[in-house]
Amino acid sequence: MNRALLSASDRWDSTSSVRSNPNTYDLNLAANSASSKTWHLSGYSGILSLPLFADLSEDDINYVMGLQLLEFVTKQARFEIECVNKVAQDLAFGNYTYVISDEFKLDALKIYTDEGYHSYFTKKLANQIIAHFKLPEHEISSVVNIHFSKISQIGSQFDKKYSYLSDLAIVFVAENQIVADISSEMKSVVHEPIVSMFKDHLVDEVFHAKYFAELLPILWGQMTDYEQTVLGINICESMIVLGKPRTDIYYVSLAKLGFAEEVIRDAIDLKYNNDEWNRVRLKDRMKPTIDLLSSVGVFQHDLVKSTFQQKGLL
Image 1 (cartoon, rainbow, N blue to C red):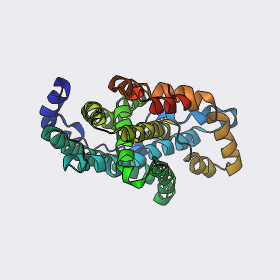
Image 2: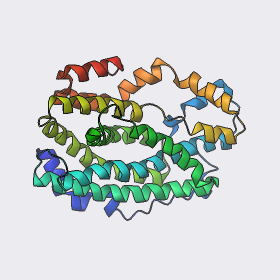
Image 3: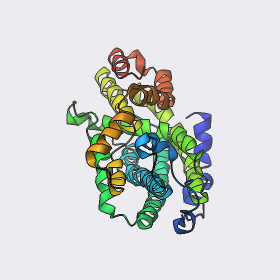
Image 4: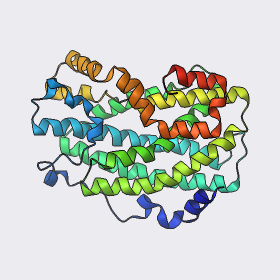
């Protein structure tokens, strides 16, 4: 275990931020909604730059951006439990055939604990946004289900006995990317409860990222050539699923503002169906993970390398 990870692990009980911080992350949106948009994730609402939406009112813009944040936190609350903690549990209790140290197994339980707290408080944020907009919860759940359906298809071309490599792939990508993603989104948010939530989450995720970055070469070195193929291709698929804009929420937010489904579809196609979003921005966003894979030697595997090249990620 390298020094940085060992230090983070040793200090975990006192520095696990979301768990140890007394902040309750209450948004108090009713008192703040009229004055600013700075509790939203502005980077997730690029569609609003289209001329079609130039005449939207401030309240309408807040609504579209607010539902983008709602989709993000609802997805994240589920992802922590259904994806990250599934892998953390399997690592902790030796459910893989790969050999890892007892320290790594115990640290997996630390991550499991962190993610439970993350899920709780993130779902709490989601509930507050749902109440603020008086949105039926099933409407946001149906959108988030689409995202998890895409996750479930990762690695579907391989035998089901290799599904654990799909689990590992999505978590390797997500936990390596989330530090950069949170750091980027924090720049556009000033509403204190959300800033505090992101900052505390970020402290925890730095530890998680170090853990999975050190775990990857340990597991990769023990895999057969075919397992490396499966994991590598699944990582590529995971980057695409996690890295591309999630636009399904627009069919809820913009529809409630009176836009027809075909108009929303055309707007999404105009804004996002191009190389800028599907290749250039995706590759740029995934650079931290690409750099990690390169350092581990993943791209020395010819089939994995060619898959990344075909998808425009190398």
